[in-house]
Length: 418
Image (cartoon, rainbow, N blue to C red; front, top):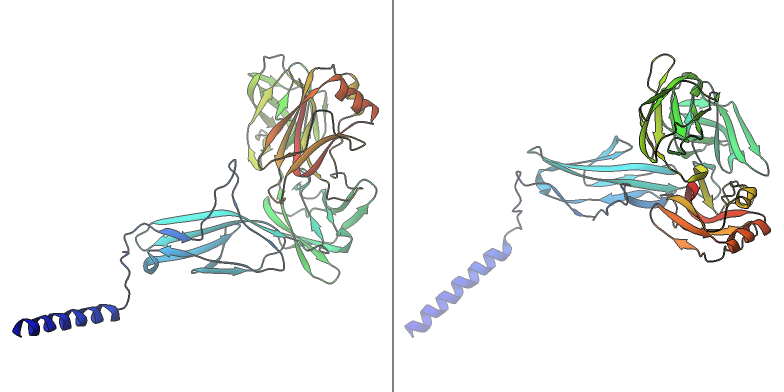
């Protein structure tokens, strides 16, 4: 009997312990000295050095995100858009105009430790919105000069805002080849990156991404690749101020042609390889080079025996209207292919448009007939498409009025033949 009594007491004591444990409030085991971590959401990695796309949404949708972090009791969270703080705390809710934005969230602890995640936010315009997308280097502008914006529904625009300056000196142009706004860049516009806002006749505002404002001498094209002992065409802004280029150990001061937007020179007779190009202006400043959305005082140039047929940054999308210059890539004259011998290789260097929802490239004749032995390719990163120019391919191009690249969501940057 006594044994049973002690057993009952033991059971009762255990029951009380369990009850006490179940009634305790949950507690955190994290401390202020722990490293901060973002537990949710999971952020993806970028491709080829590009920032990952955090989200894609229409401009009439509010972007919302909530972070779960640890140690939750000892952290502060700061949200930044284009480098500007827009919110603190676990949750961000923000409305953005159409465009691509740089997104960053920083999580810091009281002990001075921090971590962050960053990426791109892509906000798409609505179908009826005025909108402008970058088609080349027209987004690099000089104060006091004329500039252009290409896009859709631009006839609705009555003014442009750049860095809070209102521009009303605008001209809408629409013809069989182009659809754009021409405007006068304010003479007092500060150098740097600025967002563009389009204002319609009802005073509604629409985003249109950014422009880069410069007063210096800037090379924007033609300096990536050249051929030895051949004419070398370099394009940019304020190039009439260039006094010299230094390349492969040689200083070049004589140019075949020199204007504000173009310089033509003879590349030195050197071996194939990579060399650095630098330059000086008439007042002793460094010539700057715009490449891969970065500005530097030097440019690595590939000297190659390949023949360059095209060099630039031409966008392609078969979703565009037939009268758009970016419906196809058709910038290589048909006569060029008449001089190419069968057996040569055509190299098409392409890069993805990160704002496009898919990327597809197809090579055809002007009749939109596939070249023999080719097919449509899908891709997610920059690359080179090689096409063997057989006699059959060359004859088809000549008979069917020329060569096209068609598809969607990419740029043609370079076309060479070897």
